[in-house]
Length: 420
Image (cartoon, rainbow, N blue to C red):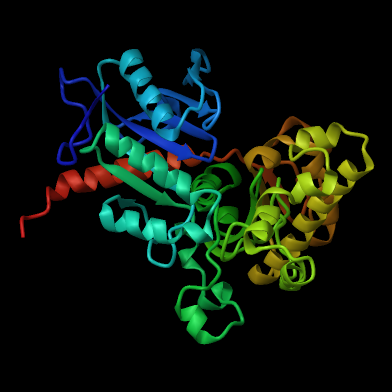
């Protein structure tokens, strides 16, 4: 699989092989990837392959499957695998498995885009500098996105790379929804609510009319993105009105290992009375709280639901309670709720969690259809329910592929920038 230069059109030319878009979502110990054709607007049905390089920092492992789910590779990468090692191995495997394909672009999920970026952008030196400046606001994610971008650039220096920001979707929110009650000088410096999981919410907003109908899709909808990272977003006319995450991805719902909303006084107490350093507090809040911290058992909802341990049950109860509390808050922001959508790993697969949330939301008018919920929907509320409830799988990779495709086509139409 060769590369395509920034000035080439993304569509494949006759006899020149197929142009493809590589989508990357890099974490601290893994890089999830997918490949889509670039000749037309990407669709899930056109998926070439998807998989993951896991075990980065330890013994690396790569696996991938094709669009039909058949395994294409399942192999070890070696000891002490770095992001560079994993990307190099992935690109070598793609070149060997799909020798006639040409890389048109690499699209990246980037968690934090700050105040500036309200849409995906082609990555250049200035974009990289701004992403680095935002590392303190997304320390779990941003450094690894940057590492993947740099690793691809070393392998293919002329390949266009696209940053798709999880914060971008929430730029439609009113100023009052993004502000903290802080001195204005801090707000002006960018200390405000940003919101995250925007690529997931953008995908759900895009498919809502086809699943729930156009009228309901443009109504008052709350989407619950429930996974190891979890948040909720209030949509009106399929635009973000309010969301549970704020300045960082620590805020809002209880998560796999993150605490969610916490009294700032607890932080002061830990530092002033318990003597914890800022780094120790950060490590605690990002790694030792949430489902894992409360249960002492696991950060995996499947394990907790199957456990008889009292603290495991407490963790699930608190997780559901926090969702119900935030649903009430978002209902206030919308002036009511017409539909509730569950998505992401827990939202799509944990019927018990969905059932408990709907029970606590009965005051909003949702009546659960238990058999439909067990079957995974898409509609899991009764036909007479005043507020409907749905399960809709999200697809962040597809959103990144589509954004990358759109930027490539726009660049091809406009041509290279003139020489200064």
